Image (cartoon, rainbow, N blue to C red; front, side, top):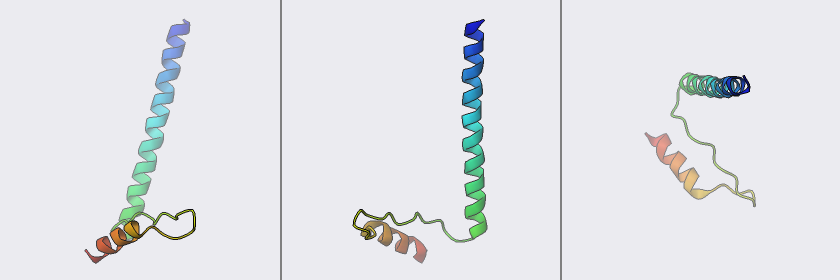
Length: 65
């Protein structure tokens, strides 16, 4: 009885996690498609407050396409 309950609880948590991730992914893809431009990751701020050059250059190169 305890074994069945633990298996059911595990399946429920797994299903909840999968549902949550799929909902988030679908929402994010819809958001990117509605924005209309090529999705670019946000430039990561370094501890001193300056943006990383590689990420900015990557954004610039992608924006030229």
